[in-house]
Length: 348
Image 1 (cartoon, rainbow, N blue to C red):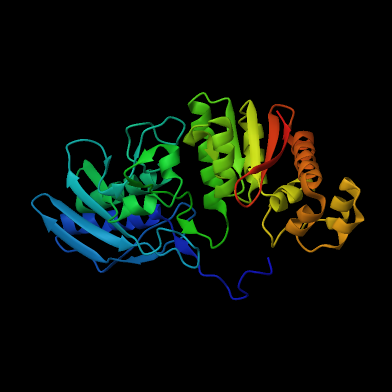
Image 2 (image 1 turned 180 degrees about the vertical axis):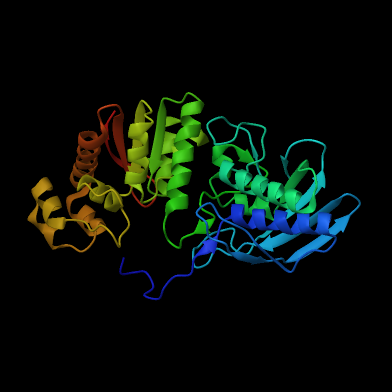
């Protein structure tokens, strides 16, 4: 972890927490007649953060308020987004609608069913609790329709996994604790898990996890896989594989460059350069060429040993994942160069 800043990193708030705060402010305006400048909410683990209200307005039978998403020091694409909630009496229990910039679920396998706004269960529960508390406070019926919107959310969603997961039209309203912990990687791994869920719900028998966009394009073209078969593994091989063992799919292809796959072949489950290094002595022994032990990069090693090295790395990666995770899954490995050309394969 030496590449991370030494200062204490500032935590932030999930879209679900921001939406809950916006709902509370909007209800204050609807039932109390005046929008607050700030609101305090209670998160699932008992924390009580305060959120500034960025904007508020109201009309005949409705009110809305917005909160600016603060992700702290986490590189979250939704940092700075305006999370807006409009509330109105609807003559029924609390219901949710997707406004502009909030996605709609179109595929099975996600925490909410197709046709529903992409507002996850925990944020929904948080907002329902706020409605109930505010209704009791003002002596009102809690028959509120909540419409969430995020200006520019459709463009933000294009930078997330939503299109691949079958969430169209915008971002998701997420969060299980309400808190964004900087560089925890939890959001990325959670998205991998949701990708597995969607693939299983669609009945897919072959999926692929790749270390980057170049290897993903090569693998998808090689096997003609649909978008929702492509799991955004990145460096998080362990996060993908451990979940797949618990929620198996018949065949899994792992694609990547030689450097990442070399680490996988050594048994590394986190392939980031700060957390795993290539064992060049081991590579040299595997290909029977002592010159490989003297290099500094896998690219240099490949220039020396060529396809022999690529094949050895692919085979080692296959052996490593099969030994640890192969009881219920058939694996194969596809190694690509920097141009996206397949240079070695191992397994199915």
